[in-house]
Amino acid sequence: MFLFKAARATYLQVIGRKRHAFPYGPQEVRGDELVLLAENRAGGGTLHKQVQYVAKLRRVRPAPPAELDRLFPGENAGQRWRFVVDLYFRRKLTPGFNLHDVEGFDYRHYRTVQGFSLIRENDQLAVIKHLIDFYPSLILELADRSDDERDAS
Image (cartoon, rainbow, N blue to C red; front, side, top):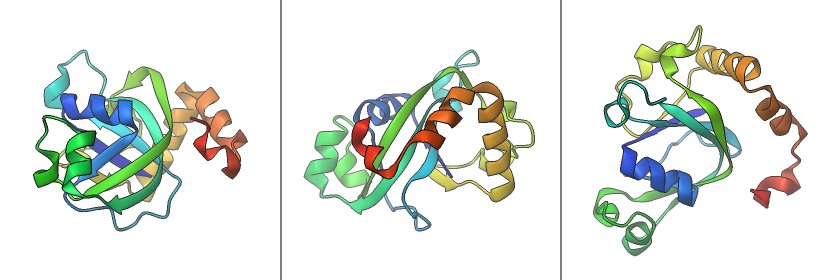
């Protein structure tokens, strides 16, 4: 499980395009990991929930500057980033949640994350419990999906 953070403008593009970009790619990617898509707190204000979407991670790949600029216009992406993360199974969480709302999740550990972080095992368990408690239909949908349904969303 990963945490991806982005500023508001980039966050909206990530959600819309089901892609994120980074100067370097996560090395621990196996594919099909759950990703918490979080907006940087500074961009959202106090009433705005930090995690409003989840997705599944398909792959990380190098991307040419022209593709990055096309995917993220106005972000100077071709010079800032080198890797694209392709996502699928994007789902909106209603309502969203803040990382500090997840019981047993060490949100302080991830406070300084810039871009992405692999979520530690104990924190993954806390997130799964939170999702089961507050978003049970999401967990059921994840459990019912087969590999051949990966591209349906």
